[in-house]
Image (tube, rainbow, N blue to C red; front, side, top):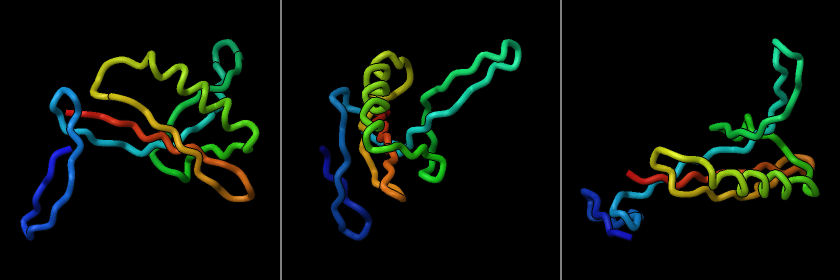
Length: 108
């Protein structure tokens, strides 16, 4: 962590990665989308992320853990870019459902 001083004297902190780059984060939200292949008619569901909570899938509390585990188990195979890690957090939604906030940690 590195102290950062603003123009008016306020103090903030910036996280610095082990490689020396500044760590930043992106807030994303987990989505489950149905996909139908037009050529074959095959159907499947895919797990992806959205940039706003309004587009997030809402999960039943007894099912959300399986989606989080699937994302965590597969995200280790993501490659390229400046992504360091992902952090998934359950966020209570309406009617007792749960959204999943995905914090993507990146560095310069």
